[in-house]
Length: 307
Image 1 (cartoon, one colour):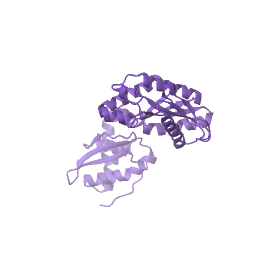
Image 2 (cartoon, helix red, strand yellow):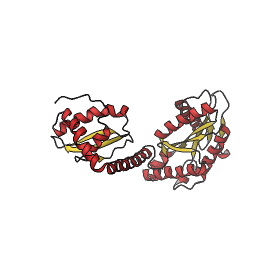
Image 3 (cartoon, helix red, strand yellow):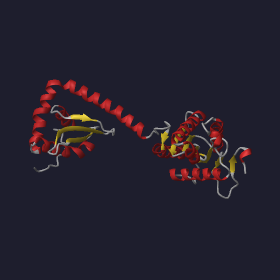
Image 4 (cartoon, one colour):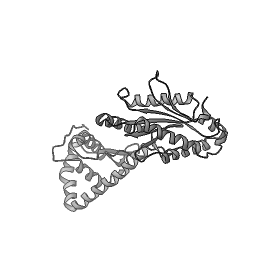
């Protein structure tokens, strides 16, 4: 059976294809994309359900990319030539269905569109949320940090970013088990939420690392917020926290502010990580601001922890 390269001319559209599918026993199934519809039809020769993917927005540019594929696949399943199928869609099923219940069809399409949008939003939220802590995840921060950098450069607004690491977390896990370690991660996430402003964005970066995006915040303001987080964690009662090397569960924090020399997402994250490593080297449970390697360190640390 010869395949065709059929283009939309106005006589047939993906709306027509969808109505044809729905009136011939094909069922719409879930798909995580907010731009695609997937219909499941009859089984193939091996007993595997045939699935047909169509663009959701129905515009000509996207629809033309899949229309020929849809017609060719349907023709194989239906045992017809592509041209016979086109003729059936154009002159029989579609016109008949529209004449019978056009308003109901449009209502169903609108309902399906709303349901798919809701599901797409749910899938989108799940893809950028950390399941354990409920914070945004690493995928989200890359996207959002890029947006904030562009905004900062366009309008000249300050923007700061911090990396946070739970001190001696591996030791805590080894002593108390991973379930107890998960509780520490959840409790630390709550400390972040309670210490931040509504405009700030807290993220679980991975493992025991967190990060925070601080829109319209200069270095002085970022250091104040970082110190508030450090104190909140240190004063929180964690199970078995007294057995940690510093006598509490604590965090080290690296802070960086956007400057002309730090113009990319990668540079901002790398600078915050350098400041975090410096905080670790200076005794942990501290806040370290990124600065030129030749400049004196700018560190906030409890006096009893200095070495």
